[in-house]
Length: 268
Image (cartoon, rainbow, N blue to C red):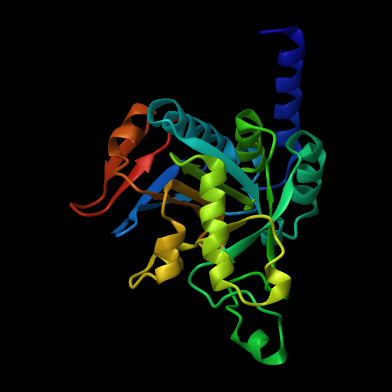
């Protein structure tokens, strides 16, 4: 360990110790069942904790996504959804790293809600109160500078409630074109049809049966969908394939609560 790195680690610890927010390590991954799209999990990670509470989340996400990249030939795309936060600290964190990530503005689309449309007094009354208020245009920032930058964005923004990851065996441009074609067929208002790319926004409610047709279609070709979901109090993970073997390989420990309910403990 270099002297500079050692000093940085000491400085980080001192900074954390001065932070008045609660330190509560986020290390619990809950199995939430399966549906036609795959297995559903929620990594419990409530917002507002001390930043180092999310260190386990960062390590897990990096190891998890790298496993799929290295062993299954998957490509990782990373997005930042600043519409999910009002935190100045989070916005400044993103701004500090934006020059390295060269973010591209795209549109996120809720697959279990009506197509994006301009807000009127009538549509405002229909808005789900658990979703961000005041807009129906959920813009995202796509990291464009390669795999390392995507990993960096995923780790940097973990715990802020804004990260979205898409992992696929389909070549990136083809996957993005497929999603764009799907969502442009869904979206009719012109102002929402001007974006270069479109990606799905999912929460646990989106994955309840019966699934909407566009939810199923939007996940075509996606191996892993990962979204920090403030609505659900953690990180939503949807996997097309069973994850038990993968979770064991990256050091997670299964905890059986009952014969049909279990959790995973993330490595510390």
